[in-house]
Each structure stands twice: as C-alpha cells, then as structure tokens.
Image 1 (cartoon, rainbow, N blue to C red):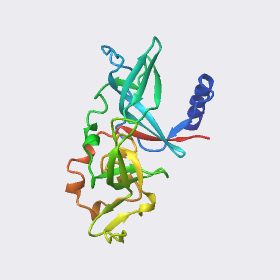
Image 2: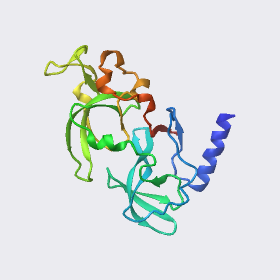
Image 3: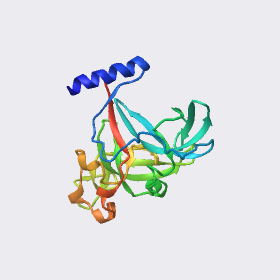
Length: 230
C-alpha cells in the first residue's frame, strides 16, 4: 500500500512538473516540520529577512531544512530569495508554506555566527552520513556575509586511537577528507544531535559537558535527508 501511494504521488508530481526530481525520506524527520500555510497576518516585503526551506545536494542525497534568506523581489505570483550563505536565487509561489517570518524555524541559529576554531559540530558527509567533527579554520565567505569553516571529520581527545601529523590523538577520519563548508550550511548541525545515529559516535570518549552543554534532546533539528529516486 505504501509503495502504491508513493507511485501515485510520483505520478502527480511528474504530471505538473515532468522535470522535477523525485525524492523519498531516508532519515527520520525528528521535529522537522513544514506548516500547512503562511501566517495570515504576515506581509513579506523586498529586502526582508525570512525563514525559508533550502535544499543542498550532496551526491545522491539532498538535505532539506530551514535557513535564513533575504527577499529580493516580489511579484503577483512569486517571491524570489537569496539565502544568506549563497548567491543562488530561489523562487517560491507567493503563498508557499516553505517561507515564514524570520525566527519561526531558525530562532536558535545564532550559534552559527558564534562558531570558533576548535568547536565541535555534526557534519553531513558526501556519503550520506552524519559525523561528529571539529572546526580547524575560519575565513569570511567571499560571496556572502557569512563565514566558511574548514572542518575535519574527527574529534581530538586524549583517549583517541589515532594520531595526526602533529602527534595529536583523535577519533575519526584523516585530513584527506577535510573540507570548507559555510557556517550556515544545513550540512552543519549542533554537536551530538544527528551524529548519534551515524557510525561514528564518540560519546563515551568525549567530554560531553564541553561538547553539548545543553540537553541535546531539546534542540530543534530543522533538517531532514532525502534521496533521489531513479
């Protein structure tokens, strides 16, 4: 029955948009949500910062989550936006439920602007898995007002089973996989929120008071993972 329902949805989507990619969820939605409609008393305007659903492709996977965007243009039928971490333009129907007043879904996103070298965070890798990692460097993003993070898919700890070239002990992957990711990318999430469900979870080896001072069960996770259906 579930497969039949999915085929029906797929057929309807292809009817209205034959070139649209079809996706299915591969990661539990947690408390991720898209409201049924916009607030009735909300009036978007050009130049306004808003919350909007963003999609980031990572190989065959697509991360979908709420992020901060700026309205560039409003017409009778469309609202055109740019996300604050990219120059890519995204268009939504004027009554889309994938946009909302600023802070509706990103109220706890201030941590992204406060990231510093040495901070740990959850990182979505190119193979579709969440890992706990570390920020090694920071630099301004040339294309936006945000900053780029040079991240490592590893965590430094005195009990680590591996050593880097500087003889520092760690758990995780070597520098071969280090990469730059924008601080406002939805590939980055607060530490120990999503990596718990991945293959590399070092809770027992790490100082949890340092990594996650808050109760991670109460953190709003505004991201979900989709996979393209061939």
